[in-house]
Image (cartoon, rainbow, N blue to C red; front, side):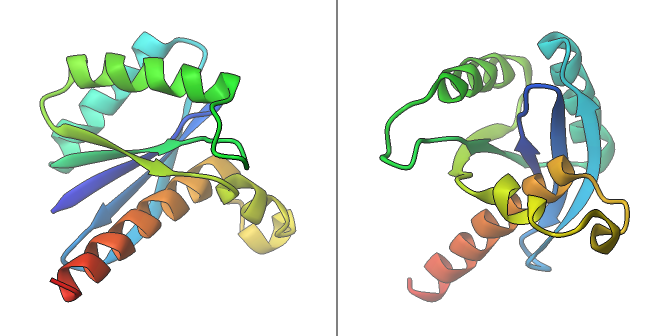
Length: 137
């Protein structure tokens, strides 16, 4: 199954693409986040072009499992996205994804965007969880 991973940010939205058969996610692109309607339009285009079957959105929760202001923004975005596209949308815990990559020096990231790397991390975690649950079934 082809998957699209999304890391919603204040300024940029990171995007990754993955495949459950291959079991891997790769960083793909970054979308400027100024207009959520444009972000959703761009995502719709990617879904069609890349034959995406499911979207995985990083869901930010506070360290104490409580909602934050960003959690509520992402919830609104997810609802809007679900109404705009035909494929299923699931949420995946994104705690610490951007923080992990931000500690890697920029020159070692080889010009890759933190936002797209965070989306890749979110999507890879989801793929790994799916793989592990099918092994335990």
